[in-house]
Length: 89
Image (tube, rainbow, N blue to C red; front, side, top):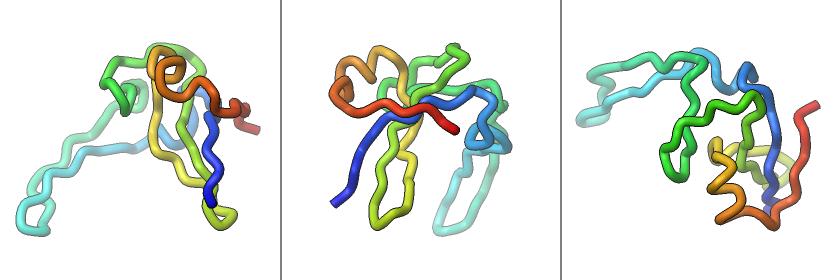
């Protein structure tokens, strides 16, 4: 059984560094677009997140932490308001 929670991290957290969008056709990467480190969007509604602290929707399964994605304040309140909130160490 997995445990879901919100983790608060800095917008300079390593998870937002060196990201890219890959376009794949027939199993091959045909194009790659780099994503600027400072560009963070809500993975639920696609709104730009400009806050210094970013909410990550996380879960733990078999002792391993997984990150579903970043969420904005609006989506946190609308869909995940009952989840425990923790701060990154």
